[in-house]
Length: 391
Image (tube, rainbow, N blue to C red; front, side, top):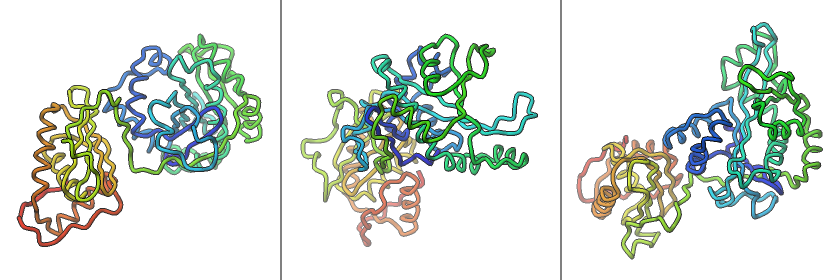
């Protein structure tokens, strides 16, 4: 869901942030745990599949997702978050709302919109500390504050749901209830949700051994009372860091730089470029180098790498004098090091970029959200090398 893509929820106890690409590696590690797989009824995914899932959850109108982090070190003021506030080291879980239209088991009831909640505090060291309760109540407050907007995006983006509601003459402006399904042996989760005002639909578990619990009262006042009783203070919506994408570097002790001693300089006439690889079957993890060229020239070279099948792009970000590429490739570190060194040598030479090719370059850069204001290419350069930028 796009509604919360730039919104973070800050409290004295936890921080909720939009699920973004830089969270995926840590989330992927969590989901390798068999206990978590069983608790969430999930199958293990590859890292590439996890990235695709993150994109789906961000864009699908029937899913609202936050990553749960430790509380912001800067407190609960109204200032925007810093990049490090939601770094992978501060992640502790996630919370989701899945929207659906329910017309009864036989399909003969009036359609109603139900929001199903899933909550995970991933690591045992963070469990039994009240973080699950703080997360749930903060999430309920966000839902109470934005119920109309959540449902508008759902109905606007889900044509099947919109048709069912329209034919039944239902407005779709309010949730019928919020729901959660919990295994009958999970007493802690049952206690958590019952303490937050959810009640069992039936005293008998269903065919899958689960209880369904529902909460009917979604008023802001009732949620605020729960937050107060739980000692969760300072609830405020803050602006999440507005970046195209960002990439958390691996442990510095494991980072192998390919750059020469003088390549730590960023700025004219050099651009500092870094590649991170997410593919499991490669010894190439990351590599950095300073390139004697403009961002325009560098993105041309990167698009040619993609065209030639050297790697695929997961995400890319850039400023005037630095660029970061998160990619996926099975190529070895030695092969990539040779590639970027050759790239450095080639970028030191001049090349003519025809105007029609610059149009294609701009489209490619826009697709990957490189940077809004790139340096202007100079006319009348020496050689006549042709480029295909369609990657």
